[in-house]
Amino acid sequence: MSQDIDIAYMLDTNVLYDWLYAYIPQIKLNDPYYKNNPHKWNNFQKRLIGVKQFMEKNENVIYIPDLVWSEFLGVMLHKDMDVSGDHHKLKLHFRLLLGVVQQMEAVIQNNPNIKVFSPQSESFTSSPYANAAELVTDLDLVDQRLFNQLKNIGPDKQKIKEKFLDGMDAVIVTYLDGLAAKHPEQRIMLYSGDYRMFIGFPRVRTYWRRYGFSQNTGAIFSSFADIRTKNGTRHPASVLTEASVKMLGIL
Image (cartoon, rainbow, N blue to C red):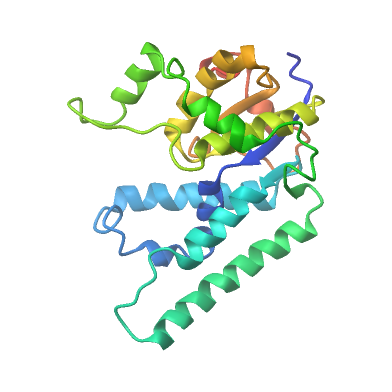
């Protein structure tokens, strides 16, 4: 596939979380994963800066599935509500989060390159939910190679459990398929902070090719510092050289 094809991006939900945290990173200070761990905290802040630049300085098209936006709102505003204090404290925190959400909405509405879409608005020819159900019930999807990759994530080599397309992940993948099918003039990259989604996507893309899965797709892990939108460039994904594209498994 020609590298001159227009690059576009479709967001995973976790990217929206990071975008919000970029405005108020202090709300994660008490997270056990980051607390008293300056190295992890610094890496977290660097990722947030990169995601904020990606969302606000990108000249390429960014697609946000309606599913992703709805999941983001539900998780940020209604999951893990702190009911240990009084109702007034809860409402103050809600207003803080809602204020940032409204800033994000303003960026989206004022940027013609950021588009929230639905299966209806893009006239999908099949239901992404039905396709996702078929995808996750395919016994052969997780082959030996993907099994080994999942097994070797992290330092624990004796791990017992892992995850792949849990929750809405499978539906997000099938949204990408439907969107790419409607835009053959673009190479649409799933931009995600989920490393498991990133390493497993090439398997989905190649294995499900027999079902007609769109090949003008790919996946980028949002924590890769050298894959970032550069303000002022027409094709920010041009940093994906042929060698790195093959390494990432998206050709």
